[in-house]
Length: 111
Length: 113
Image (cartoon, rainbow over all chains, first blue to last red; front, side):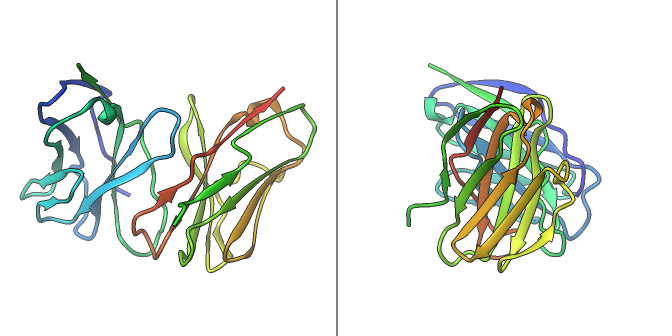
């Protein structure tokens, strides 16, 4: 799996868009970018994943740069329930089934 | 579907005792994963199964740890004998295929005294 780098912590005002960056400069052509989050005392929760096109679902949007060396997870209207640790993972979709979770970004939504 | 079910949710035991953690994956999922989470080491994959067969157990810390999946709807993680450094939250997750979305259970908080 390619190494990913995320800021250790971020704050965002409630109701604003939360933009969480992830650097994966060594990502290879077949590696997808996955995002999970872990709310305190709960198991990790899948958010979204993508290869090179931008993706959007009911939870978030994922913007991947054209060179695929970085990406941004966007929570369009952050709520207090979005306070969590967010993990960015770069990994191929087949073969090694492991997801290697790093230290993530601790996002705090401020009322 | 009820999601991934783990039991017990909390376990307190004394050093040297046997501990058994249980997991029921989401029906129809053919991958099952066991993770351990501590403050020091974060979230670590211990072992995973595909169609009830252990595929990779390289994350299992010691021979004191063992995992089984006797059928598609049940898996156990056993620690015998337990030690204080095994104290952690143990998560079970399942997925439909390969690295498709992994669905995590609520975890078992283990405290070994």
